[in-house]
Image 1: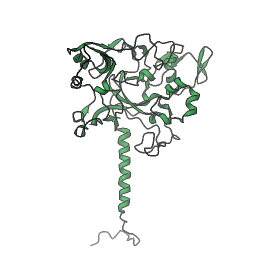
Image 2: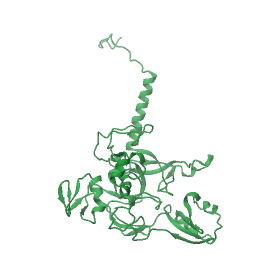
Image 3: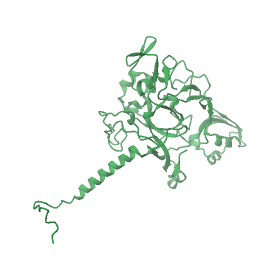
Image 4: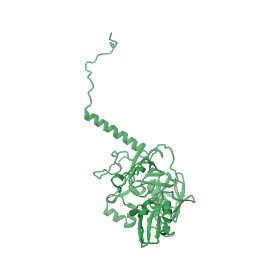
Length: 399
């Protein structure tokens, strides 16, 4: 018996056409791209370490997985972009995004807040303006050195949205509301000195008792002879190393003295934040600096404006103008300002080889990308054939 007698037979019904092999490949690739993009934007992304600013915590050639979930995934602010390209197309060198559509900063709930000493990936705060011919040089530093007209005349200058600025990785030294200062190379957070951990590096002057030195001894102590040791006088060398490493150096019988090298207090370094001629600050001596916190109000005067002017104008998008002895914010007289975002102070563990908050100030919360979790691969370009991969660093967590 035919139990489907109630169904009207459709003589025009045709069997579905099977997808071609090429169509199946296109669908599979499209699905893979969409899935990988969602994972990359909202969950986890791979990064590489290009410079030595975090040595010895992170080495050049380390490949990291960075969690977007820990601090909350940032909703894309520039949603129309080529998949897997950051700001520049790999072959053509053209822009990899379209900034005709811009979304406001939003962040989904995360597992935790940023904590002091977290290793954080973020967009370079001063990367809003770039000279395309020399993208690895800070535009604002060039302007301070050569002037606006000279830079704009000789280079192609472009602006970039927040999420398309260069990615940096540093250690969070101070969170919103903290007071940061530094004296003789030692950072203080809220008045409490915070010594570098075992992986933090400083510069030391090492004087030997003799000029006849077997430098292979220092390789056994973990130094890279060509990168970490440089001669400054016949018997004195400049060493870059951690405190435990330098303690071992000082105990060698042919070493006369080991002295940490820092810039003198009161010496002014013009490229140190906030670039204020009234502040005699340098990379080893600065502060105190109050890190802005969402809802915090500061008075606007000649002392505070060098510290907070960029945050008010660039990061929080206000029109800021000097009017006589006072200030106008969005056309209205203002004697104070209340911050809309949290900010952070980031520094590299290799203190004398790091471009960090000492040179460009605060990192706004909308620039935060994620938390560095672990090293999945480490590749040593200077290693021999069988030692290109640093096997002892694979799958190592980041502390």
